[in-house]
Length: 177
Image 1 (cartoon, helix red, strand yellow):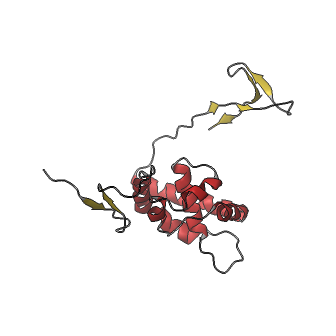
Image 2 (tube, rainbow, N blue to C red; image 1 turned 180 degrees about the horizontal axis):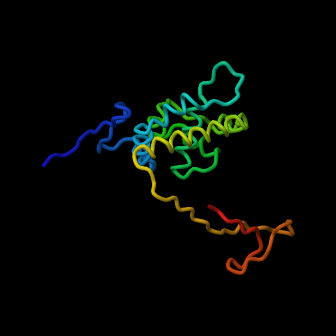
Image 3 (tube, rainbow, N blue to C red; image 1 turned 90 degrees about the vertical axis):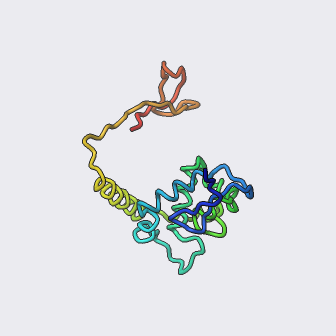
C-alpha cells in the first residue's frame, strides 16, 4: 500500500497537494477547476482575446486576471464583487490565479465599469471558440433548453407586477432558460 505524500498539478507545478496541515481554505475544489481551465486552454484564450477599452498603460491586475478571478469567485459561490476583499489573501485563490494577492473590490468594480459592447462581443466570441473546442471532442446530438419560471418579488405597485398563485406573492414572473 502506498500513501500519497505530495502531489503536483500538471497545470501549475508550484501547486502541491499534501496532508500536513497548513493554511486552510474551504475553496480547495478550485484546484480541480483550475486543472480543467488549463486543459481547455481557457486561461490562454482569455489572454489572447479579452481586453477592455482601457487607456491605462500598465495595470497590476490585468483584465484577463480580473475576469478569471470573477469566474473562479462565481464558481466558488462568491457572487458579489465586494467579497474579493475577503479573498485577497486566500491560500487557494492566490495559487489558482498565480498572483501574490487578488484584486480588491474597488479594482474589480473599476474593471466592470470598463466593460462595454466590445467586451460583450469578445465574451461571445470566446464562448463560440470554446464551443467549437468541445464539439471537436463530441458533437451533441440534441440541445435541450430547460425553461423554468421564477418569482422576483416586487414591493409596492411596480408596473408589470402581478400576483402569482403558486408563490402566493406579488412580483415579476419571468421564464429563465
